Length: 196
Length: 434
Image (tube, rainbow over the protein chains, first blue to last red):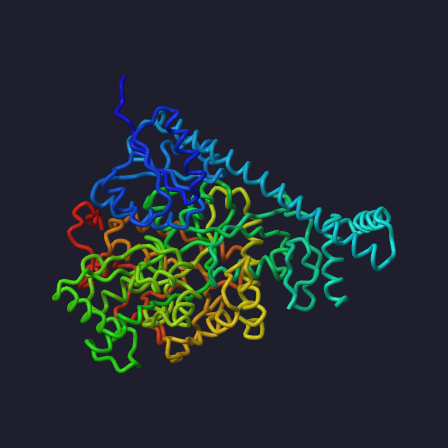
C-alpha cells in the first residue's frame, strides 16, 4: 500500500537540535520536512504548507500561540489534535518527558505517525544527554578551579602545604556533609569579604 | 527577609505563633507526599508559592515541588500526562477540558481558586494618543469610555483602509481572552471582525508592545505595569473594571488523582487556605513581594511587584497613578471558593464567542469541573455552605459588570443572546437542547 508523503513541520528554537531531527526524518525516508527556528509568521507557513505533523519543542513559550492558531483553523474545518492515539499514554508520557510535543492532523493512522514521534523523542533525549554531559564537564572544571583557589587561600592564610590544605577542605566537607566544592566556595566568598 | 531555598529546610520559614509543629511523617495510607506543581511566572501563583516557601504545605505533611513552566499548553499536557500532580491554571482551562475544547482536552477539576484580580488591559502610547485625539479623552476616563474611544479609532482605521489593530491575549481559553473581548464589545467593537486577536506569552507582552508587533494586550500582573513603567503603554482597564468577581486562576488536578488521594487533596486545600490568608494580610505583603520577585518565581523588579500587590498603578509614561482597591484578593471575600457561577460564566463566554455550543449537557459538565464540595470537605465550617452562590451575578454593590449587564446562571441562553456583539454565523455551533 502506498501512502503519499507526510508533510512534517519542525519548530525548534534550538537550531542544532532541529537539524538533528531533520536529519533523522530524512534518514527515515521523509522528504517533505520543513524546519523553522522561530514562530514569527508561522500562521502563514502552516496555511501554505498544510503539515500533517507538527513537532515543536515543549520549552517554546509560543506553544500557546499555536493553540490559538489551531482554535482558529478548527473553525475553518482543519481539525488538528494532539498526538495520534491518546490511549497510547506510555509513548505520550515519554514524549512529554523528553520535551517533545506534537500536533497531528486528525484521522492520520497511528502507525504512520508513531515512528516520527519515536524518532523525535529519541533524538531529543540524545540531545539533552549531550547537553548534560557538556554541562557536567563544564561544572567539573569550575569546581576544580574553585578548589584550587580555596587551597591557595588556606595555604597562604594558615601556612599549610598543598596536601594539608586539601585534607582540611575534605575533612570539613565530610564533617558538614557538604561537597568539597561547596566548602571551597564558602572559603573563596569569605576571603573576598575579609581580605582586601 | 530570609528566603528559604530548600523545601526541606523550612525551619527558618516564618510561621504563625504556635504553628511550628513537626510535619507528620506520612499522610494516612497515602504516604508521605511530594506534589509536583506546575506554575507560570505570574503574581497570581502567589498562594502556591507561599504554601511551598513559608511552611504551610510542610505543616500539612506535603512537600510542594514547584516547577516553572513556559506555556499553558505545557501545563495542561504535563498535568494530563502525570508529570505534574497539580497545577496553577487559568480558570477556563478545566471548563475547556471537560467540554473537549483545545488540542489535548483531558479531565481536570478545580477544587481551589487562587484568588481574584490581577489582570489589566494595556494599549500602546500611539493608540492611546489616537483615542485622546479622535475619541476626545481628557485622561481621567473609566474603562467603558476607553473602550468607546477605541471603537472610534477602530472605525477611523477601517474608513481610511488601515489594517486592523492587533491585540494580544495569553491563551484561547483564558480570563484574559474573555475579559478583553468583554471590554471591546462593551465599547462597540466586535473582537472577531474589527480587530485581530493573537496570543503572546505574558513575559513577552511588554517587548511585543514596544516593538509594535501588537497594539495592546490583556494579561496578568505584573506585566501591565512592567509595560507602563517602561513607558511603552497606557493601562486602560483592569479586571475590577470589567467584573470584580470574575474568576482568575485555579488549582487544577486530574479527577482520578483526587479520588485516589482524598486526604492529600484535603490537606493541600488546608495548606493553600492558610497560605492565602497569610498572603492577604497587609503586614505580609512586603515579604510576599520579595519572594515573588525572586528569579525562581516571577522574576520582575520587587518595587513593581510591591505596588502591583497594593493596586497602586502607574498607568502611563507620564507617571500618572491610579489606585485599584482590592486589585489582588488572595483570600478575602471567599476568593478561594471555586464558584459554580464563575464556571458557568466562563461557559457563557465560550458560547458567546463561538468556542462551544450551549447545551444542558455542557452546563452539567461545566459544573462538574469546579469542585466547591472538595473545598468544603477540607475546610468544614470555615467554608461557605454549598449552594451559597448568588442567584444573579452583577447586582451586588461594588460587583457590577462594566456594561451594567447581569448574569443569571439559570438563563444561560438568554444571557448569551442578550449581547449585541457576539459570534454569529457559527452554524456548526447551535444552541442544542436548551
